[in-house]
Amino acid sequence: MLKATESAETADLIVCNGKIATQDDRQSFVTALAVKDGRILATGSGHEVMRHARADTLRIDLNGRTVIPGLNDSHLHVIRGGLNFNLELRWDGVPTLADALCMLRRQVLRTPAPQWVRVVGGWTEFQFAEKRGPTAAELNAIAPDTPVFIMHLGDSALLNAAALRAIGYGRDTSDPPGGEIQRDRLGRPTGMLIARPDMGILHAALEKGPKLGHDEQMNSMRHFLRELNRLGVTSAIDAGGDFQAYPDDYGAIMALAKRGELTVRIAYSLFVQHAGQELDDYARWVTLARPGDGDGFLRMNGAGELLVYSAADFGNFLEPRPDLPAALEAELAAVVRLLVRHRWPFRLHATYDESIGRFLNVLEAVNRDIPFDGLRWFFDHCETISDANIARIAALGGGVTVQHRMAFQGEYFIARYGAEAAARTPPIRAMLAAGLPVGAGTDATRIASYNPFVSLYWMVSGRTVGGTALYPERNRLSRMEALRRYTVGSAWFSNEDDRKGALVPGQYADFAVLTDDYFTIDEARIKFLSSVLTVVDGKVVHADDEFAPLAPPPLAVRPAWSPVAEFGGVGGFGQCRPAAPAQPRAAADAGPDAGSVRGYGRRFAQCLHAAATESVKQCEASGQPGVVF
Picture 1: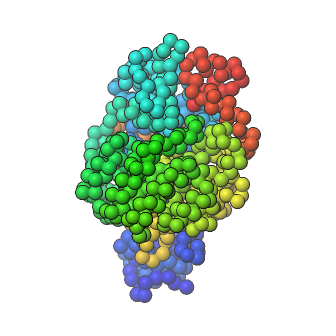
Picture 2: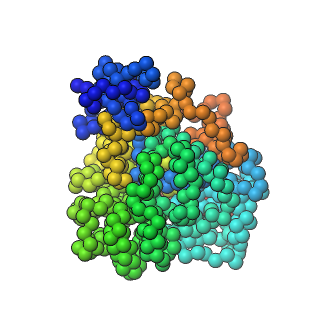
Picture 3: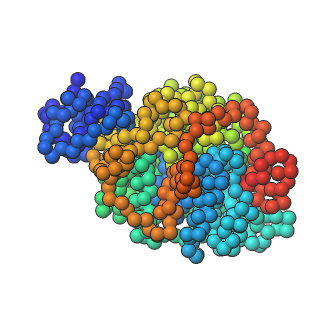
């Protein structure tokens, strides 16, 4: 039966002859939909929907392809990622270290002084056939004069000698709190920076590199949003971040919004910037902004993901769980009271159940004095949360966003805590059974890849990107349920569940046409999906293959030497294989199970930070990979 508004209004766009997953309450499929003024006008069969066509209606034959609502990453550092995208070489999804080093070598040749070559997260050595990352010697051989900075997730970074010189790290440089500058036997920095477990040491070093100018930042942001569109992403909830101060670092994104050039809808949170002055930060911000300020493409969402530095429990499974200071409760309570009084939604980074219990003690106490009364709040991550604390979140009306950090760190988690603990890390099914709102995301661009199909693969298969089996069937999601976490599920977290997430009349006309059928392809191939046609607000923002004539005009890359100009984003390693680009292999899923990886993971972690040549040789002599990461 036709689902539409009562009158047969004229559609601006009709897509037909497809397999369209509407994500409505019945999780139904239709073959056609109509769009008017950026919203879904009608869904149904081709015959039903075509009654909205007129002479000037754009009609697109989907050729039987699968259509999903635009993906909504509920935890993506999209603003910081966009400001820096044109500076970064991405190793996301690169299958071999040889390919990664080839990309690095080519980019070094293209990069003018005094610029750096940087790979900033989104990869793990377990994705490489060699099962190792680069060594300092390899970086120095490739780039003796060009600074190279390679960040590995959120636990460490490797700098070549030129980068150490550029930032001035030497024998007399002191270790920052929560971090270590690894040194050789003579006290010289080896190039390895280690988060123990604070990522501040990594971010501070990266901040010393050259930055893009304002116009180049806007160009960089547009290219990152186009890259997300290529992967079917049409919305993101920005989680703020270190060195992302409001309003100074929001100039580029706000300028693009004013010019109508955003192609991803962004709701942003304000992340505290000054340790010890968190209450001052938020007291100032509540006078400058209000949740909901903005429009359908850029709107202010609230506070977080860090509210006070004393509550930062990180998520680095190579390091022990941090013991949070006694000052946490008083500091967090003061900030949350301010936010609740001003009706600011908030989000809070929370990895471990021990931390979550303390956070909930604070939230429950504040709620007794100043009722939340429907104010939306949520935790991010919650890898080790207990059923008891899930119930407490439900009682307070909160939610949880989950990310595929375990797809990149699962082997490390098993090495430290064991396979049994990993089997419910995080316990997504338990969250859903308790009635919690649950949204999905990536925590990209540094902690993990921004590719949403890797996240969907992880939720469905229960495996890491290296193929290690983490979860039994009872903690994996069906393909439909995983997709719902990325669509209708994520919409709750920006208070937009009445207008996005499903392809039903009245909601935003944001959708993606996929390269293959997500619902039926081999499980291992889910992570290789992308979009051939992405529509946002009823307008085509990405088009490829048979839809290429509909593509927006190309956008030049600035600066011209940017890695994006040669490699693009995810999957750009083909430039290093001109004769035979790599094909995805189903066998990549035939990785070790959780039990067999534990011993390797523990030994691997012991050798992980062996940046000095002597240490690398010692690791190799012991029969383990001679690796840095």
